Image (cartoon, rainbow, N blue to C red; front, side, top):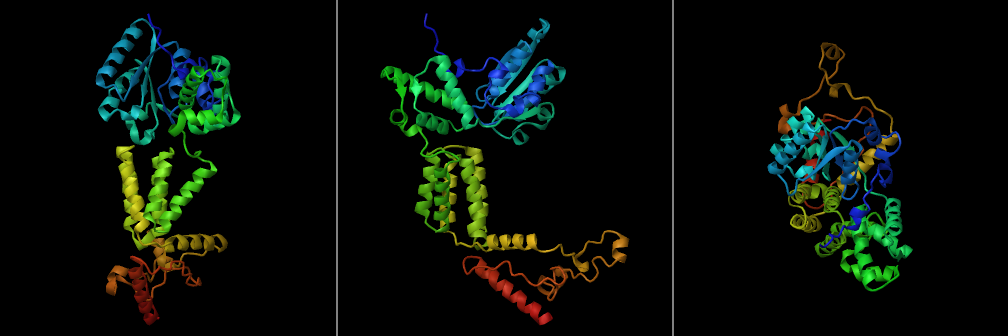
Length: 426
């Protein structure tokens, strides 16, 4: 009979709470989740965090702590049938005087009716519900289920956490020695994900054993993993250099260069959601009102990626990058906003002019709040010529200066016409 191979990540899965690496903001002495373990009273909860941060491990430890039957349901592969089977098993355990913990992995992938199926059993206490999700539960989990579960936010593991896991794997499993620079590269590649780290380490270990190597060097590691490795470290200098190159290529109106840097980042493992956020920023900062459609297109691209994911949704990001690169450029709003912030920071708190104040009560009206205000819609052309909207005594700051490109050409002409009408009214 062949013994089934157990992955390294499973062999090293913590057996006690003290063996868990990371998440000390939840599991440290006196912290919320540790107190929940120590209370002896299980409660339904949702673990929200990136992949490989310990969501499944903590759920299993919770079941062990409360001597409960542990039932796992994958929302990716399961459905109502699996939920019904879990209920039946929980009912049988209850009849035997045992508790049950039902763990739902990727709970955000269950639809509303599937999530609702847990509610009566959570309320009746038939089982403790524990969900795991990489998505914001505020958006992805039904409010009814969310209200019955505590939400614990798990964080990506730090570089020190991951190095500790590598060291433990070497000691416990007798793995080959690893060159320090190779450890650094492994940790950077894992990007806070312990499962990815251990799976990669196992791949290297098998290859090293086949070649009878006694040490995993950085050069050999690069040769074995090849294209699997990121071309830069997330959060490292090269990462920010590359996003800078993308931003400057868009600003410089070079669609080919912008596409090149976008694909470099995606190919290197950058989070497409992060890239979408950066594109929204570029549309605001470098295009602005020269082409207001750019911001809407960037928001649409982000939404498309949210719906389609990788790889299909990445095409929308590429479309957005090209549009932003060829769009007319203006940083007039960006500069105006920064100038306004700088002015407010050094200026005193000027009172709101009386005619601009709101007057919801008779007392305020008696105090001349809102007195003399001219309703622009009732004026010729929808513009109250000569009216002033800045605080009394404050000179015209001229924060916003439209550029001579795109829609801002028309905006500048409109502002010139309005200024002429104001000058004539004075």
